[in-house]
Amino acid sequence: MFELYHHGSSVCAAKVRMCMHEKDMDWTGHYIDILKGDQFDPEYMKLNPKAVVPTLVHDGEVICDSTIICEYLEDISSHHPLRPADPLERTRVLYWTKAVDEELHPACGFVTFLCSHRHTVWRLGEKGMKKFLDSTPAL
Ligand SMILES: N[C@@H](CCC(=O)N[C@@H](CS)C(=O)NCC(=O)O)C(=O)O
Image (cartoon, rainbow, N blue to C red; front, side):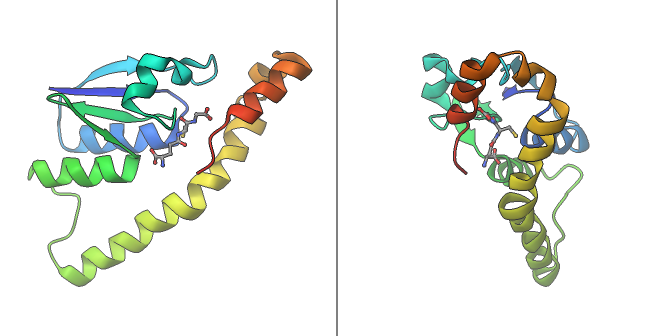
């Protein structure tokens, strides 16, 4: 059984949802509202100590970090392979996933919080906004 802790606006969670969709996997979702601070719930932080989404629980085993989760799903399911068989082609895929983790995702933070969620963050007021921004995890 696959349980995914995720949020709608999380690009990292979207990666995992897309991977599971491509592979026709059934999963149960647990919505973690990262704008309300659900990620800091001590119970959730037992699964994901970095207080971020996504987190996958597969038959009781906890796996964090979207790229690692996608690699795991690829390893356990041969249905609709997402990784090429050729070693050189696989290496080229790694360049892409590395770039997403190291460059694209940090850049997305600005788009997510300054554009998409700016009204929600603004409503927190000056103190609340500072608390919210201070709580944003380092990569
Ligand atoms: N390396 C992690 C990064 C996860 C991450 O930063 N998730 C963001 C959403 S895309 C999050 O949960 N942020 C919570 C917060 O900003 O408090 C992954 O790839 O899963």
